[in-house]
Image 1 (cartoon, helix red, strand yellow):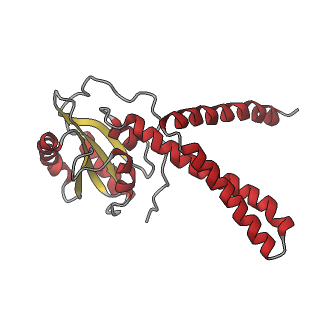
Image 2 (image 1 turned 135 degrees about the vertical axis):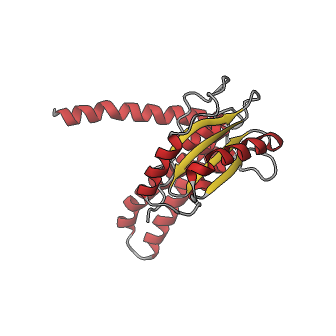
Image 3 (image 1 turned 60 degrees about the vertical axis):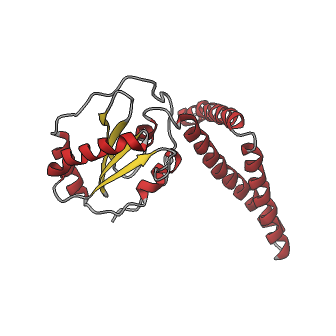
Length: 231
């Protein structure tokens, strides 16, 4: 047996075990999730087979339906697992930072550039949109932190757009499970070269605070969303 075949045999059980572990967590977080996954897969299979029967090519559409059912099932499973992971880390200090650090699209994330003793904090993300300041904490406390941080970096940012986003469940805040989607909708204002130059200027600024001590969502590997299109 070749080395590649041996490696593949060793990797496959690991992947299946990982899927089972995620399925167990998903079942505990939402008992309706797995039935929805199976329903989506079976519904896809029935639909494809029905199309094949109507056009008289059932023999071809049965294997096609099986492949489509597996693909749809895995997509729905991934989405459900993502929601469960968001639910686990929601409300924990550093949840927004965990999502920012696992985003695609060339973002440079600096955790806790500002904060206070209540574990309210502001994270900085730099990307094609410009500078994005993301706060965690009650709106009546983080507004001052965001304003101070925006003022602190405004000279180094120069004419670059600075966005501020409050993450939380209060009115006017962005829920943690919608943060990634919200950032991906921001316009692409900078080129890659401009992003690199901006990062250098901001990294040269002294940090306003050290990372506050407290519970952090350790071990939470956030699923990666779709990669935004670059200009």
